[in-house]
View 1 (tube, rainbow, N blue to C red):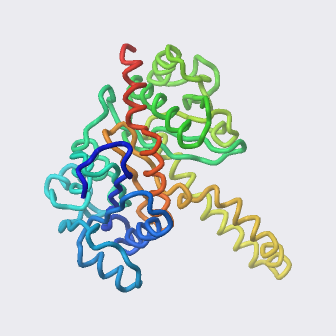
View 2 (tube, rainbow, N blue to C red; view 1 turned 180 degrees about the horizontal axis):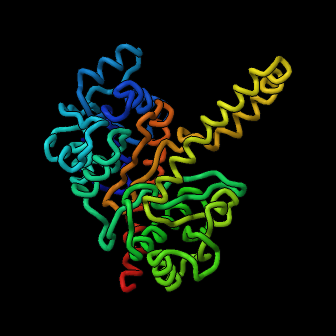
Length: 344
């Protein structure tokens, strides 16, 4: 692996082959699919080499053996104490992969493994961007106008006003660069649109954000996320994670309802069959596979976290998203903007 950290070089992406409920199968195949579709980046698989080679052999796909990095240990999905896990398994795929980004031997790390362990490893080993109190995870939700990205969706359970300000700054940059929205509008999730409503934290955060040049629209309610009232919604991770899990349950519920409707008779079944193509396109916007996963913003490197149930397609899209973040030089843009508002 090259030690060059030149931005003009190809993005070097490490995929955790041992991460996810269906690892190494889905992680390996998704990475290979990304590699086969586009070779304008360098791709590496990290994990137990024998298991990686076995997946490649069984599926009759090729991948450069020199791009496989052996890591013997695995942090399991069920490891409930992330910090203890990364300390007790220093040779795990997660710790080793994040360390390579820290050492500038890679530009991005992707894992669908233990979310807490990935966040802890990225924060402790990569370190935080100067001026960032807490990293944040953002998840896009489709709405009537396109997409709304929510920060934070679980990186931290609670937040201080300064943290919400940081989420707003990084969320604005991410939404602008990734979704092409020139001047993203920002709102703080609250129990009412009135300026006087909200928790002590959200009210204090609003006062901080007002002092920036962000396109701040004040309070927004839960329904505004789907209406597309703003492009970026800021909230603490406890609330955001509940929203994310609720959103993830929408597709399974709709599929269940469609199936139940179809069981009630041939006419209903025919109606569902006719509408199937349209439903597939509509439901695609709600699929986590299309985005691949969520970014962990605020750490000193690109870190993408996939769903534990990630398919090969989701992993492939995570690879593409990581490369796009690299091309947009997001880490430098975060650093610059956070520094601009360091006096607040």
